Length: 155
Image 1 (spheres, rainbow, N blue to C red):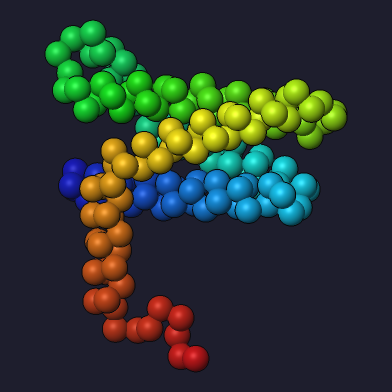
Image 2 (cartoon, helix red, strand yellow):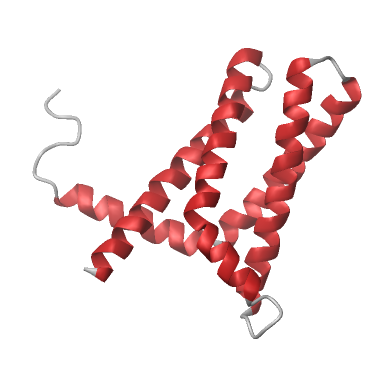
C-alpha cells in the first residue's frame, strides 16, 4: 500500500510539474504577442507554483532543518537553488502585477531581468532533476504502449 501511495504521489508531482512548465511556456510565448493572455497565463503560473510548493513543502521543511547538519552537497544545492528560484519568482510576479496595473518603464526592465534570471535558475533546476524527469517520462510511455486501446480512439 505504501509503495502504491508513493507512486501515486510521484505521478501527481509529475503531471503538476508538467502543467506548471506548460504554463511557463505560455507566459513566455504570450509576452510579446498578447498582453491579456500573458497576464492570465502569468496568474495561472503563480497558482501552479504555489500548488507545486504545497506538494513539496514537507521536503523544504525537512531539508531546511538538516541544512547545517550532515546533508549531501547535491541536496543542499537543490535547496539553495529552489529558494533562489522562489525569491526571484516572487520578484518576477510582483513586478508583473505592477507592470500590469501601471506603466512603469523601470519596473518593466526589472521584470525582464527577473525573467531571464528565473529562466536560468529553472534551467539549472531541470538539469539537476533530469534523471527523475526522464524516468517519469519513460514510465508513462511504457504505460501508454501497453494499452490495448489507442490513446485518441479511432480516428
